[in-house]
Length: 119
Image (cartoon, rainbow, N blue to C red; front, side):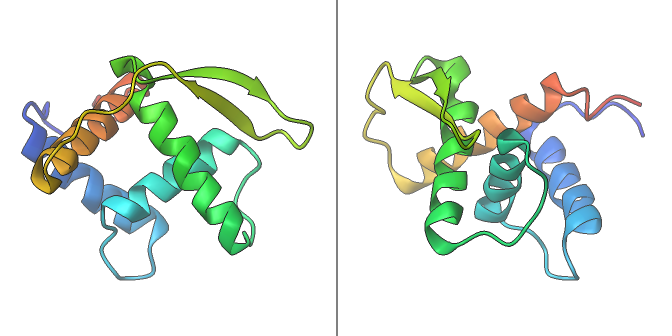
């Protein structure tokens, strides 16, 4: 693959690759990708999660994604192995479109650190 450089290209690449790898046909959306990151960060592999666990997985992912931006900091793992974060700075009030861009940038950055876009 040629080097992917801008946010839209990297985002489209991610959606396509993650959809191919983890979806049964339906294209993954932002929430689906956040969920996958939460499962990855929990580190217990895929299994059936209860509804409240799914919400917690989304929270783990959001904290991990926004940690480099200074909003959260890892605090500890609980007795069940779930990571906990503390809030460092409240999130700014963003319009829906601005929230989406921030999350897409954070997700692309997350996968960049994993060398996901390398040849």
